[in-house]
Amino acid sequence: MASVNPLVTRAEQLANIRQIYPPERRSVERPAFRLSGAPYTSVATLVFVGAVLVLMAFDYPVGTFAVASIGLIAPALVLGWFVVRRKVNDIADIRR
Image (tube, rainbow, N blue to C red):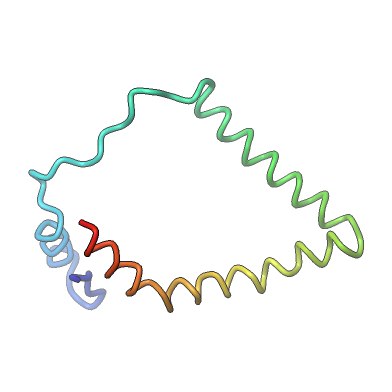
């Protein structure tokens, strides 16, 4: 698996990225179907989720504890991904 080295120049990084993803490669095309009201419905959904989190934070003690625990759960999820990432990538390579 190739990676981009942060200690090299920008030109060398771009050259490395072009080797990994050559420009001739076709990227994934957008699907023909579209969500009705997009992108406004996406923004509305994010606003709704944010409002739910704010309301949960004011619901003492259970909601406040739940929102505060996000600070512990999110790093645990990120750490867990880094632990299993290689195995997941190996399984994905086998399936290709």
